[in-house]
Length: 394
Image (cartoon, rainbow, N blue to C red):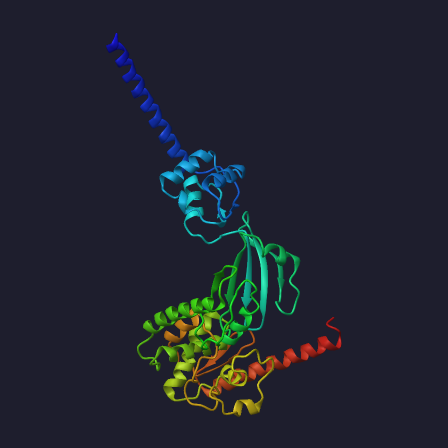
């Protein structure tokens, strides 16, 4: 009798273990298989949330089939304690395992509301926008100029949300003075900046910030990023460049940055300046003259006067030989690399061509012909503008 009972118990145990193994395999399959989500969603994880709350929210949005399996999978992979606060984009069909990775790995929001403080060469603006998870495109909610316009309701409303992401975006070619003045307008930051950073020392990029971050600390991040970019460019420089120090490379890159906004011609612009340096010619570039007038404090807002082109400032490359003593702006990665690896050309002249780019020339005669073409374009545009003004633009 006891032998019969023991035999049955063993049988039940084997069957139970078999069923349990099947359940485990099924659960694992559910955890790693394609999820039920048909459209992308933005999952918001509040500070202090746990996996139970997140799994319930995911179930409500149709992203997981079983909150329990979601939590058990996160526990098994030892990721439950790594949950990050923020807003995270979950793509259609993402598995539960994939969603766990999304909400535990990066820590940087990938969707939801963001406020971007854009520091441009000609303007500082604040843009409030939201990512539409379905189209994966940002929808602008508001834009304004801080200090000149009153903040709109959308900014007042969304900038106080716990999951709103804040970024400070520096455009290529801004000056250090412009950056500092702009950071004063970022009301999410704290602290003051006692000194203007060295010109050229800040990397144009997008920097995520949090309310309460210190302005000096943010500038230190920008400086550290530029040091890395400059070191990499200097290391990769062509061996026969007339450039002997990283500072000289930074100065040349800043001039390239201010001379052209056309990415495809940066290396050609760089070649002109390198060829001039090699031939002992003066650089004769207007942006350096402008910097001598403004010293980076704002935009000149008008054409250069003949007296300014002749003025003896440390940056006037119509007067001085070689490079100016400092950069004239903060160059980006592309201009640094263009300065380090210019195109191989015989160009020593260039002038605007009317398309936003430049016409390049090897000889003075070719250059004078290009200048004549540009003057004709200028005259035609001036006449057209005058005609529009006289007719009210009709």
